[in-house]
Amino acid sequence: MSERDFPGKAKVTFGIRVPNSGPLASPESIVQVAREAESLGYDSIWVHDHLTWTEEIHRTHISSGSENSNTGNSPDFYEAITTLAYLAGLVRSVRLGIACLVVPCRNPLLAAKQIASLDVFCDGRLDIGLGIGSPSTLKSREYEVLGVNRKLRGKIADDHIRAMKTIWMSQPSSYEGNFVAFRDAEICPKPRQKPHPPLWIGGWTEAAMKRTAALGDGWLPAWLLPDDIEKRFRELKEMAAALGRNPNAIHLGIEVYGCIDENSSKAREDGLGTLAIGRSTFERQMTVDQLAEVSLIGSPEEIRRTVKAYADAGVSHFEIKFIYPTLERHSQMLQLFAREILPAFR
Image (cartoon, rainbow, N blue to C red):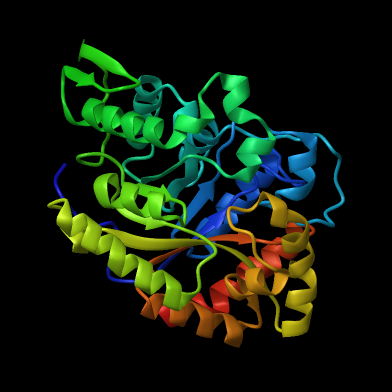
């Protein structure tokens, strides 16, 4: 793979999680949030990915909405690639992202073809986050239901990523790995972006850092303070250089919860409850106060300071999961953030 820069390298970019899961998930909600984010000048819209989802996880792991959203209990989770394919024809300027595809649970040949087709349909506006899941993956028995060996998920992920890259970058394609192998496979179309859409590796652990150094174009962790993320990113670049890659071609993003209000106390009151009930499903065990520290929760002035601290540490993209009880409240937060935060980093 040739090294290249991401779109938007020269500035800090901001993406918004649309409600493809959570208490407010619906096709109408997804479209409304996507179109509003585009109209307000956000750079991208993101979905997340799981193939199984339980009512318990639906009530606790809230990536869209909030713990006090007034909705039914059906654990609807709209599939990531399908959702983005739907949105590709409805929004025309924002980039489309998945954070993150649970790689070991996908057939890599099928996933490679789906991703390439989607990249063509959206005219090269696609970003792909790749990961191995989270505690919510374990609690929903995703690996067990799909018949995938959970203990080998990291090795399977690495193998599948290499297989997908081979399909995107060669024709016909041949690959021999420990978990997938094929010879002279003719799989088209190839992605619009060359050699393929940017691959963001999810996860904050050392294993995720090593995967990024070897296979990723960007790193998309969560739950790290600015000083910590800066130190780890330096280490990741050293890993990449040791593997013969250009460390400066690897970019840094962060996945964060957000809750903004002119009144800082109200922002915390509205946001911390959702963080509290989701603690057991997050990738890192932290107190609620610690979770608030690694989120964008507070007044515009407080959030500008936090964003600047992360940007100074090397973060070039924020994937924001706002905490909101209603779509009307979400719209208010989107507008306030666009008015008070976006211009400061453009």
